[in-house]
Length: 331
Image (tube, rainbow, N blue to C red; front, side):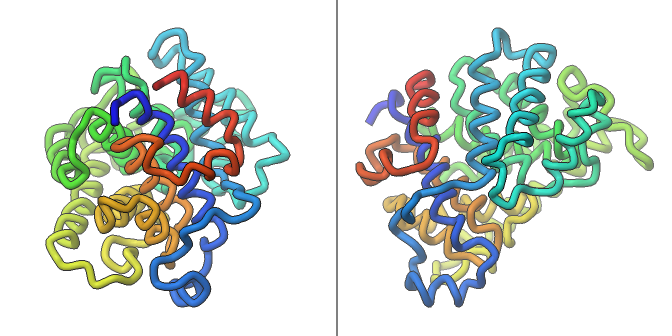
């Protein structure tokens, strides 16, 4: 395997996980396993439809693809345009998150994004869509961090949403660069420590100014601390034997950003050599199954490329043409 297939592998993996998790979201673990067995779903549904997770990841990806330069001045209007196109689309009927809808309603009125965002939200909508940022090979780590946080901040203004989005994109970058999946949680934990008081004012402007916040460093530290706590829970879970069952019981249900990252990594790491099993495990949860599974798929695909996925899935997944075009551009 070479790096040449990993962008496609990650983008398609995200969509595959999303499609497997779409029918299981909002169901209990007992209900899911009664239908699919203890390993969860292993075959794409027919039709293989995705949710707002893939739709918004595509919105981010196209904005990145269209950007003449990776700067806030260039990217913010492109992201705004793509998010508003998603919000208006008749295909936006997949139980989209209220944070994204409310922020897009504000953005549509021409508000500054720092005022349009939902300031208190750290829902996983900030990082379910960020994995394409980790696939752009031309970004150095500072640019990756800025882009990841900017795209998160347009809708989710909570510092944990910003930090978790950066970590999710960084996980994809590290995997694509050859880091072993088992080493990713530790690398992300180190990133939390190193970035704890780094506020990227050139990308975020005055987003930090909230009641009770004295400095931008105080604002951003809260996000990194909460992500560090979630990764510590993940590392503790990985130190225990896998007894099977719902991964959400170990690292959280994934409705919030830091838990979505931790639980997706746990599902992926419980099945490091069987990506389809990882997707099934991620989809068989009592939490935010589609978001957890789409991130697990993005991680596995970034590590090992398109060859790890069943060959017939690529022609069946919704938006296959767009996934193919973006994958080809970045591969």
